[in-house]
Length: 477
Ligand SMILES: NC(=O)C1=CN([C@@H]2O[C@H](COP(=O)(O)OP(=O)(O)OC[C@H]3O[C@@H](n4cnc5c(N)ncnc54)[C@H](O)[C@@H]3O)[C@@H](O)[C@H]2O)[C@@H](O)CC1
Ligand SMILES: Nc1ncnc2c1ncn2[C@@H]1O[C@H](COP(=O)(O)OP(=O)(O)O)[C@@H](O)[C@H]1O
Ligand SMILES: [K+]
Image 1: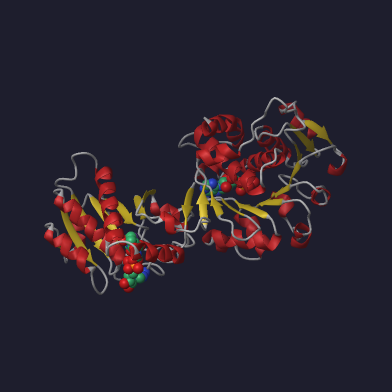
Image 2: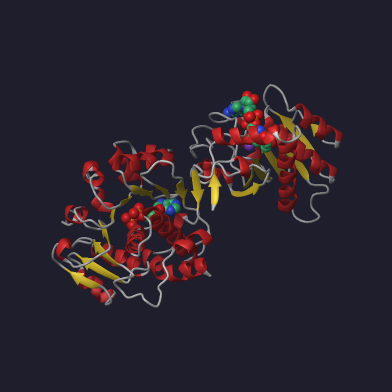
């Protein structure tokens, strides 16, 4: 699991750590890890003679960058510091000078020929976007051919929320200290961070066990996924009911069933007007064209993909088994009805649907995904999976981390891929997973399947569904 903590928590943990270590030790650990990461990024034998520019703000983030610059200068790199803000970190600057590094007063000249730039303008003390004096320098750094490494986080992003409200420096990689920060896992800030590496500075023992945000890894998902045993039969493995599709959108039913068949339930029951299309494609599906409540036993329902104005939402919400509501099922969804349910409910809106449920604009949801997903979970008393560039899963109960899915790809923004996801998540619910586990492991497998089905190229929703077993195998092997 990758765990991320907000600034306030990091500060408290750092204060405890500093109290038991000689002064400056955490910063030296950070700088050593940062310098080692820069050496690895430059490649073997390429540190000596490398042209490195350190952008140093006035705080400790600048200190980390200057101390790392000193270490690189000692290994033969040519290091030039650009000092931004009212002052520079004294110890860091002195160390850099002792190691042969220089301070330049022409940032644009040194940036034009740099191989590597260290962005130490602001760290967890930064507020708002970059200040005006830092903006042209940051732009020149990004416009150069240099590889940009953000120190702790890309300067200018809101690291607690992942929001980017002003100018920020887009990095190729970020070396972060002690713990991940929420913004390093959530777009839009995540995109500014590039590839993220964590340097251990001994903070773990001082951090709370429940992080603010977490990102699953293969081994976490492997532990969640259902495994049939000798005593399994199709009913014990769980039956998932899918209420989806309409005369206008029969394909949504097929895609939701395609996801459900790959999600670990023992059987998939389809309810709706697209039975023929579903059976034509997946003869193993049990179909029913009456109301869901008369369809027979199910352990979890998925309702909404391609449903149009079709019936079924109220019937399914009245059941006492877990229900996943997606797409058309989310339209005009009544929070009081969802809150009154006795079994768990999972909502899977995209940003537009989330905006309608919250009564705000789509842009607002996209800019502040973490806030939106938490607010929806609280308002509806439901587990909410907010789809999009970083899919987030929030639980209704307090004191639980929001999960950020690390496997997504922008190629997933294709019609019908959400239908596959809801079928898959519903199937995992029927197989008995906790709602947050069902939602987050479904998003994980879905993203992985998309990448695997078509690395770096367009992918269709059907291909995503067909590749789910291979993604599952990757995760458990
Ligand atoms: N406290 C600790 O134990 C450790 C801290 N470390 C480093 O210390 C950093 C935090 O240091 P600080 O608390 O000094 O804060 P920062 O270095 O993040 O920034 C604070 C300074 O930046 C300026 N600033 C704020 N917003 C700005 C903006 N938008 N544009 C330009 N300048 C802006 C402020 O004037 C302030 O002087 C961490 O991110 C990390 O890099 C590491 O050395 C690890 C150990
Ligand atoms: N920019 C993006 N980057 C990564 N994934 C995205 C992006 N936009 C959408 N997705 C993913 O693609 C899927 C699309 O779902 P959805 O919007 O419901 O489409 P549909 O209803 O056509 O199936 C979701 O899994 C979502 O997280
Ligand atoms: K930084």
